[in-house]
Length: 295
Image (cartoon, rainbow, N blue to C red):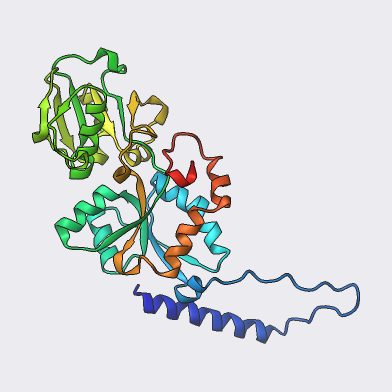
C-alpha cells in the first residue's frame, strides 16, 4: 500500500468513526460537583500528524520482537499506528525499503546495509544502533572448543558482511590469522593468512546452518539465526563481546536515506533512547550487546 493510500485510509477511518459516534447520540456527562472532567487525550506528536502509519518488516527475529514489545507501545501513545509487512527475503526487504513500500526495519547491521548500497546503488540509512544478539560459535558434533582439532569443519553464513563477521570472530579466538591492512568488515576467505589447524570453513545460507549442526564440528550463528531456530543462547561456546564487537556489526534502525531526518524517524530514535525503553530492556535478559547510550 502506498503512503498516500495509507494516509487516506487513516483519515477516512477517523471521519467515519466521528460520524458514527455522533449518530449514536451519546449522553453528555452528568453536571454538578460530582462529575469529573474527562481525562486529557494523549497529545499527538507532529511526526504522527505528518506520518501516522509506520510500516515495518515483521518476522520473528529478536530485534523485531524487541521493537514490537518495547518500542511500538511508546510510539502508539504519541498517535502512531503500525503496519507489519512480512518479507522473508532480505534483498526484497531492502528493495521495498528503497522504493518506499516499507518505512523501516530493525533487522540489519551497518556492514550489511553498506554492502547492499554499494551493490544496488541504493541510499538506505542506518540511523541508530540498537540492542544486538551476538554472533557466536555453537556446538555441532563437538560441544567444547577445547576439543577443536586439525581438519574440523565450521559452517558460517555466506553473505559478505556476515562472512567477514565470522572470520573476525575466529581470528579473535586465535584460530585464524588474517592478512594485515584489510578492514575486518571486509574480510573474505581469501584474506586468511594462516589457518594452523587447516580448518574446513564451509559457507552456507545463514538460515540453514542451525538445522544442519550435526554435519559439522562447530557452527557459527548470527543472533537472528540462533533466535529463529530456537537455539539457546547460553549454549554458545564463544561469542562477540560487548567490548570486541565492531560498531558496524551492531543492529540498526534502518530507513530509506531521504527520510532519515523526518520527524517520525526522530520519534523512533527518541523512543529507543527513552527511560521507558531502558526500564523495559532490563527485563529482557542479559544476552544483548548494547550500544553506548543504553549501557
